[in-house]
Length: 340
Image (tube, rainbow, N blue to C red; front, side):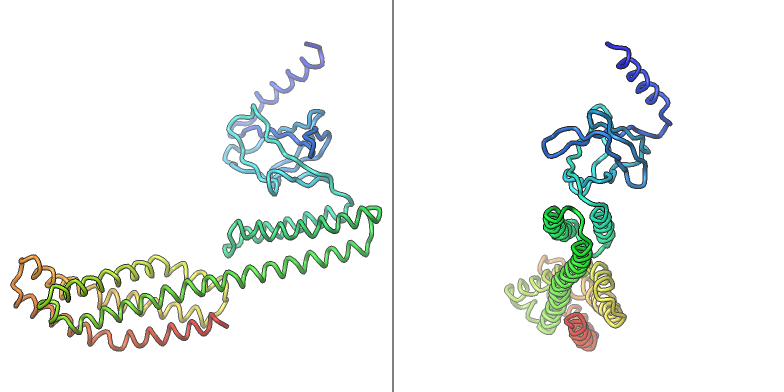
């Protein structure tokens, strides 16, 4: 082993031994499309540190042990793999994380690409969009830049008119793609929200109608089975609305930005969950549903059970008249707002 190699090994060991507690070494290797090492490249771990690649394309940076993922960018290079330059921090620094890059031409274009990535990162932090939607938007941006890159190359790499045109094009694409994503999300959410709410209303009305025929439940096995079916269907839609209600309210706030829609959502929650379910339907377990099942299992006489169930059903029917009508009106109003 020659003297230079021994010295490098000693320095590497010294750096590792001097590494502060609570930090780990992130080692990466930068290569081009042909997997050849990229030497002397400035590597930036966004928000953490930076380094230069050595003759073998390697770089080493100490990062806090709490960091699980880094965002890597290179001066004058675009990271092709992994996508967007994101990489997990391995627990061992024995094997480097490989970054495949390609060289960017022109300082103005590099600035524009950085601006694009910053805009994409802002969208990634937006609760409205999922990762695959952001990936699709970013691909469209990168396709546009690649098209203009070809024009840059054909014009000697620098052309202020092309640069201005590219900047405007990227801004327009970003705005139009974001608008398209928002429109698509709003259409999906509109369908989910209205289907869930209307299903709850429909099943609540079916159960109401079944309560009006409660006497038949004690006279016919088929009528009892139909009543149980309506109870189960209502319970399923109630559970669905209950689990999705908060998410729907947040989605309406994020995508429609309408105080009127937010107010309607709050009113619908109060009517469906609080007034109709908790105030009227839930007590049916003891006043109607319980007696029906007690009579069916022989735990109570049919006469006594039917009397109790009839009383509970009559009370519920009186209570349901206005809230169900009001809920129908409020859902229709909300649909009108969201469909604008």
